[in-house]
Length: 110
Image (tube, rainbow, N blue to C red):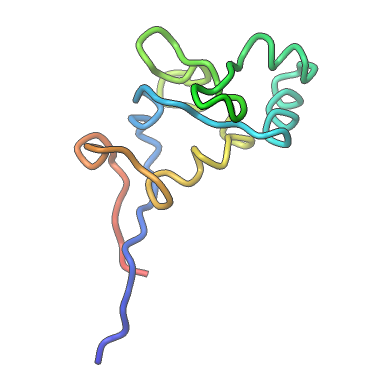
């Protein structure tokens, strides 16, 4: 009987997921890492770049009026080296309805 294998998607950095409206959760350690990365104190970063999540269970990054991430710069993430776990996990650990029509990630069997 063949071994069961999963599909893993390799990000191509198309940034289409970064342009999709939604909530990007950030935890305490992520806030600290991002604030340090952009040269801000944590309190200032929280005040200027986060909001209370709709479920009131923590913070999320702010987005632009069109729903895209404010840290997106063309096809580059200004937070690439410290981006939140939620961003790093897309689309393998979570995704949204219709993501395959937008995402350029390459599937492979693992």
